[in-house]
Amino acid sequence: MTITLAGFMGCGKSSIGGVLCRLLGCRFIDLDRWIEDSCGRSIREIFTECGEPEFRKMESDALREIFSSRTSDDTLVLSLGGGTLTAGGAVRLVRDNSVCIYLRAGISTLCDNLMAFPGDRPMMGGAQGAEDIAARVKSLMDKRSALYEEAADYILDIDGIDYEDVAAQIRDLVVR
Ligand code: S3P
Image (cartoon, rainbow, N blue to C red; front, side, top):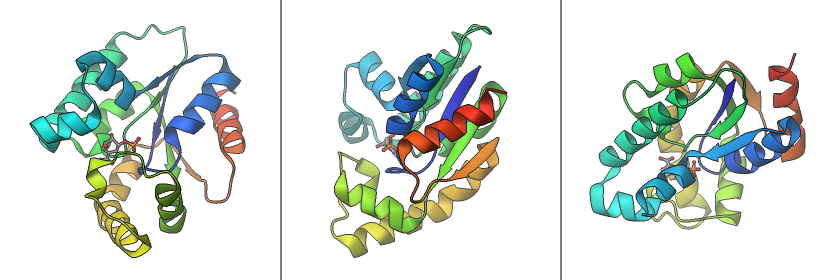
């Protein structure tokens, strides 16, 4: 079984994925790190040198490669990037090959997390300060929320819930 974690930047996909793979005793892949390791460039460098469309293609290619290398009897937790599902065909790819969990967080949770852990996020367009960040999150979320919902087998509302508890909820959903 492959469990994919989907959701907006800053919702905690990678951290929750780390906890979940510990609970399940399984392997964990963070799609961004996988891409960086396989091409030897940072996400920022890929965006700068090749642009967003090329990065989306790399994400979809990486998904295909990871899914096709799976065996049926082991478990993998795979955290997606916040925009992975925006590439044509990516929703179908994820639906056909994984149990997808949408980690749904409200705008204010996302903004709080992005302010606390800004990271290097090209898609935030250099937004700084609470108002700018909220505006950017809202405008991207308007385009993306339907895709997250379409891909999801399960939607978890995670506002105010700590990562350990979110991961335990996912474990309870997928291990029956
Ligand atoms: C992106 C999200 C990032 C990373 C890239 C683009 C996006 O991943 O894939 O910077 O378009 O939302 P996280 O969601 O892990 O930050």
